Length: 398
Ligand code: MN
Image (cartoon, rainbow, N blue to C red; front, side, top):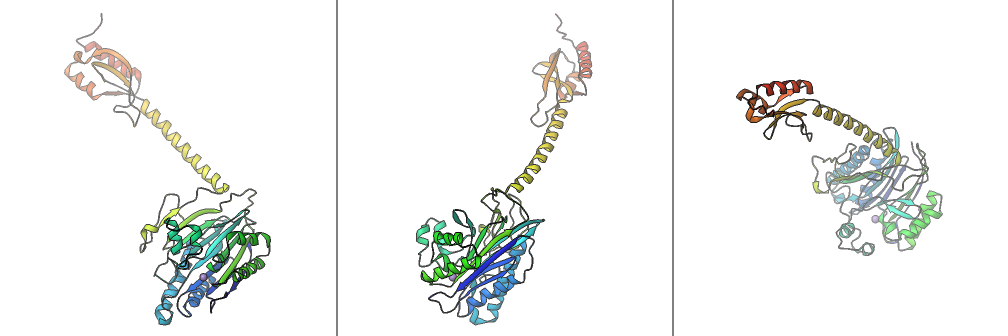
């Protein structure tokens, strides 16, 4: 099981009257949620999400994580139905969960809304989650630049949240944990105030996760603090696998817009939930950049498949070339090698001519020859060829 070290901080900011952000650090479950709507609604929705996630003690599939998030969504929807003053409440959720998948350590992450999860790399802050927000959709459409998105007046409008529909659309990823990796989970109150370089510098210079989180939250407040700010830093301390030279891409699999729990999918497969509200949005993208231990496993599988194919091909060739038949080639009666009509792309070839033309055959022999007379060996075919020649009326001997 992966060992984590973590720290977090949250602040109401300089403008808001309540802090509707919620966080959960319950190793191996780490969650940040940004509540929205109503007077107390946002706080309640975010709290329900976090409480639901807190019930998880262990995780053995990405399925499990998607299911828990769907449960949280249902809880929020049901609660809003019961209490009219909470109507319209919702929350984002971004989660990182350590899990063991088929005996190997993995990290499952998932998000709904515009809270983010980043991986710190030596020279960049890589955002692994995708914002479900209006500005992100505009940027994707090419109608807004990445720079303008950061200051867009409607940048807090989310296109997905828990508590809106009976089913939430969840994006999820399976990652390889690598000792030394540092993950950052945060609400928009952080990245709306600080640029990524500033965030990265702090993550590099401050080792202790809780201190790094506090410094980042304070910096966001100092920069304006126009929203609640929540920051969680999760470090991978130890994992079951030594990877001296790990690939920078930790993502093993990506699952987009999953309305239902999913099985682990193989490349090219897709799975739709029966009540999927946005079938067009569903796609599964398995990363090409697989870590080496998956590559050799895949390599063995490919090698096995190739060997089986080679054996099949060899038997096919043997079968295709193993027999003979007497047939017609133009005006000549000939011995063919191969199967009459061919086998796949192996057409029969003329082995030898027997010195008889079609015109020399009697009616019965002509009928037999046009159908093709099959033999298991060349000798048998030659023998019949001799008989045909003897009966032939136009023996072309000089
Ligand atoms: Mn926020």
